[in-house]
Image 1 (tube, rainbow over the protein chains, first blue to last red):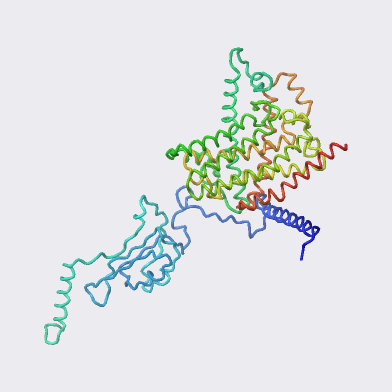
Image 2: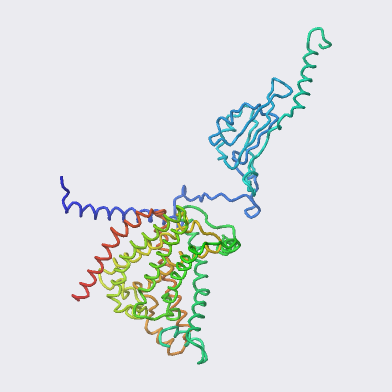
Length: 183
Length: 345
């Protein structure tokens, strides 16, 4: 099946007409924005001012659900690793160790790598004890990439500390033994 | 002394002994510092504000009242950066690109005061120089040994090649009505009123004008900063500033060429010219002419910018396809039509 010259020439002019029409109808759409005669729903310009002295806005003026830099309250954190699992960019590192109390994990390492964080907020949503939250801090410029890692962990347990805690636990268990001098 | 910088001889009372080369060099520097830099600064601010308007943004708003000092701030920031060290291979192409681009300032058609070289083929000089600049950009990109450089260089060369064909035809089309390729001849053949401009010389000339402006868009499509990538992505500091100024300058040059070729240039009503030259008020006359051609040029640039901002981020194959498949036939059609019109009427 061949396409006739006539129809291909016609197709060319049709394509030209379509191109010109689409370019200029687009231009007609943007013209009201320039002349400020747009309708009310489009009137709002959506540039948010940066909060600093020039714009006389403060971090308090930020919306309540602002996703700023993350903060983890290690006192509440249970080290359940839900945030580490859910993080789409793997920017959270959690390492747990045995602490004094065997019923509670000792969160030795809790690092958030802000060079990888996308501020998606998933970790905040899954956090059962609500220890990890978004702050309203937004300025995080540093001189080295490694400075972007925020550490919230309690620190690793030294061997000496482990021995001390084991001894403490043992004395506590002995105290709880029937026949001991406990309650 | 005829032609070359003759305006300056009339304007300033220069002693006899000064060689014309010095006058030309001084005038060149004056033209760059007094015309191109301020126009570039003012244009970049207004262009960013209007571009923001089209896209429902605020645009520059922090440096000074409603961001007026943004161009100054940008330039200060760029000049603070350390100077970029290029290899000598990159250096030579970079130098060739810069020299080819700015050599066109000698024939920048901004009135008799600013035309420093007056030859029979003035209209074609910027065109050839831009082709040389595109070739130098291609070679610079090849030397950069990065994907952005290779692709960006090839893109610039492909765009320049595709834009060259319709641009040549459109220049010839204007020359048919102008009767010569000196800027002065081109302007002298047109009157002050819009219906005596070249664009109205025949029913076919408007299409030639469209093709010329479109070819300019094809040449300078790289001036869109938000396109990203390209040869400039490997430059920073003063070199980036120079490259950005160069892209603005090409658009400016092309618009001023379109103004003089098709939109009457600096031609004013005869009685004004006669009165002023009779009264020996050269500075007023030259100033008025420069302001006239500058304002036409800037208006045309804003029109181009309106289309470019509304239809942003054209890909290279879209641009070349537009040029080869639409602008070239259009320019050919207008040239043939204009020639037939001239032969028959």
